Length: 251
Image (cartoon, rainbow, N blue to C red; front, side, top):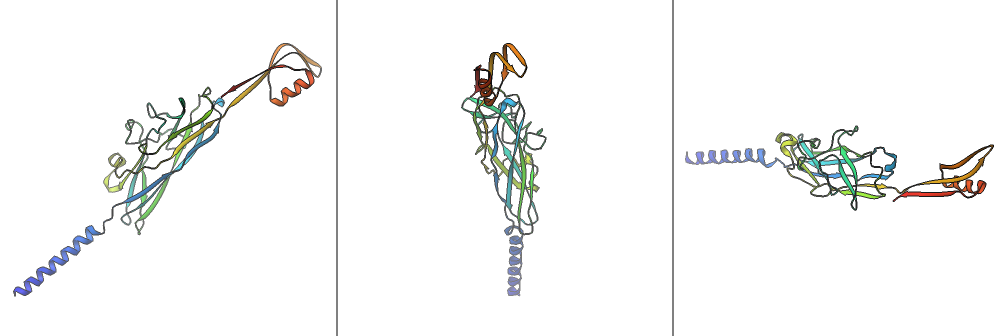
């Protein structure tokens, strides 16, 4: 009788242990890696006084429990160029500043922000959900829309940059059951370094002043100021005598 009771108790203990292992032992913590491609505006001319756009890609790769969702919160802060308000961010060339920003939408009206910077009350990051398949693997991407702002015609030429290594990127993530990105914030935070670059080109204008020159049957007297390309200046000098010319460049 005692032996039978002992055997029964052992069997219950084993079954309890198996039940506990099945409910907790196979529960995997989510693990993710992230990357952001470089934001490169290329060669730009701010004297055109227009916005200049480009894009980059945020990528997330996660593993964890099968058929679950990992919620990713891609926090991007101000970068090494800084920002006094979150909009705009700044690219630097020495002490020279060039205003730009990163956005969540193609219309570039929603700033891509962060729950880990001073402007989180106004500028938050998007939420990127990664669905894990039956093998517990999943991936997702999001487009980062970048823009150099107009109204910066007097900025000196040069290469303007800002770096977004740690702590300027902190990608938080957790299972979606934890809550929204406002709750997750920078949980399990991982950096995703990238750079933003714009090369503002040197621009020049050439003007010439002539005393008198004849074009066909029409002539012009006095100090007529004309904007000329180099080939036009050469032709003018060859056909009508050397004009007084002046070159102005923005370096």
